[in-house]
Image (cartoon, rainbow, N blue to C red; front, side, top):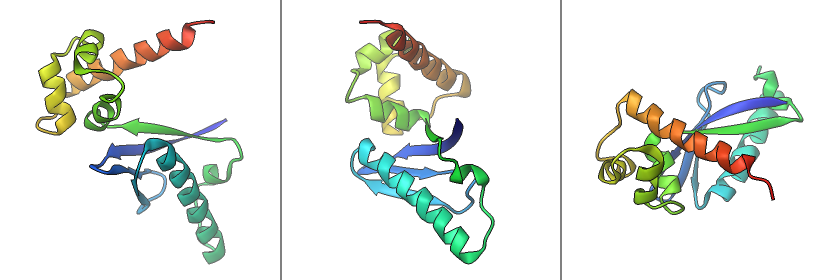
Length: 136
């Protein structure tokens, strides 16, 4: 399986993306995340078809049939994305970070220090692993 990391940010009306392997490639989408994922895939396919048509080189990974996209959110976007799923009180419980401070990060009023950002991401990763390990 081939994995491609998509740098993702939440915008006021949707999402935007870029990828280090595709210089100059930027995607902006207005709407929900599910639609954004489809839009990103279509944009990558278009990028590849244009490169082929123009005879330009492009990263081979983009042609892989088993290409999996991994979305990497910045902390502000991550919190904004999940605030409709988890309350800031719940996120405070999960991360150990004060909910008022989490709100400031989500609103873009302040940026977490790298250690604080890592703490938030690690806590959400732990939660994800716990949820995946549950069996029915």
